[in-house]
Image (tube, rainbow, N blue to C red; front, side, top):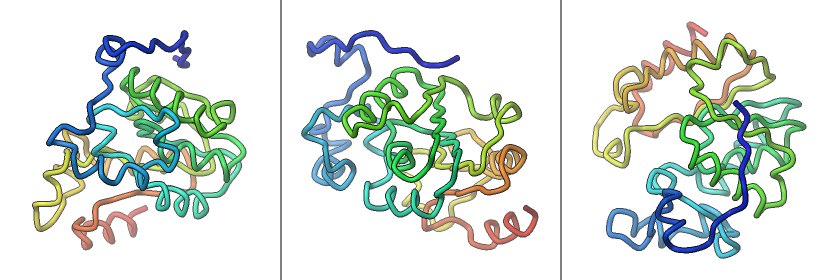
Length: 202
């Protein structure tokens, strides 16, 4: 289903019910300090929930990824609060942003509007794993959940078992059925041998 958003509510009660997160809480304090690295337009009304604070790609890196993924049609399979989708809208003709959390997708749409690119992105509320077989694009970009900040504490991040209940290998295979090119944003402690073997298989 395509996302359609009614008017935004502005009270703090509305923010609570929309899943927005107080970024100055201890759990997200280190991300709050880096807020302008995440979105340089943060003060212009950017919205994020707790997961968004942990998972949004820093803007300079999202911009670099967008340049590398330049194409006509790109699918951002795990769009979150929109950090990557926004940058793709500057380098690609069309962007499809998919997320299974409706409130997070609303935040992504709002954030895209802050950057003036909401009209270049189609926001779809869906589970990528279920929608993948119906998608066709030039590139599928993957930045699935890494299981929260705890991923950094393990020596080797396993794509198959450590993505918060998702199978990272299956995600790649589904993506390759939808597009000839896949960008996969992974933690730096990913099991390199696993990644190389998976890439060779692709």
